[in-house]
Length: 188
Image (cartoon, rainbow, N blue to C red; front, side, top):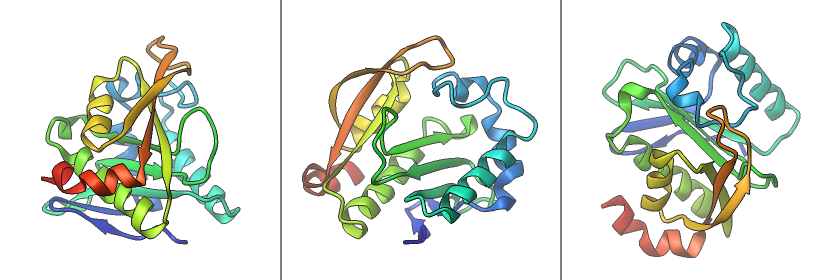
């Protein structure tokens, strides 16, 4: 299934495009974002990092990987990508099924919580998933808060090396029944 465009009150989540490379490069090349990510992400972030990432994702999609990639765009903005969410609904592995980042100027506004609600709806209402897993560096309090606000349930710790030296990650499960049962409270 192709990645659909999703909308929230303040955001458009649209499929990743090659035209997003300059904005991703500009926003993602930021230690405050990358320090909480796994060592898979290069640091220092290379000048062609965003283009390499986008092309690699398109190659995976072309090869048939089950992946949905959205960029976050403000409805009242200029169309520039200010963040990214990916959902790999049937992927097994230590990093979980969903990941995200948001450009630092947009932190603490509830935008990622709003975007995650739309992606959860897609996962459970469109794809029909029963559950999926998400992870974050144990030191990433903002990511933990998003998970708590969007109904994820903490299941334990896993080992996963991050750029800030942290090797402990929190693992969470997001369950269909819990999401649908608490959706109005989460969105309100």
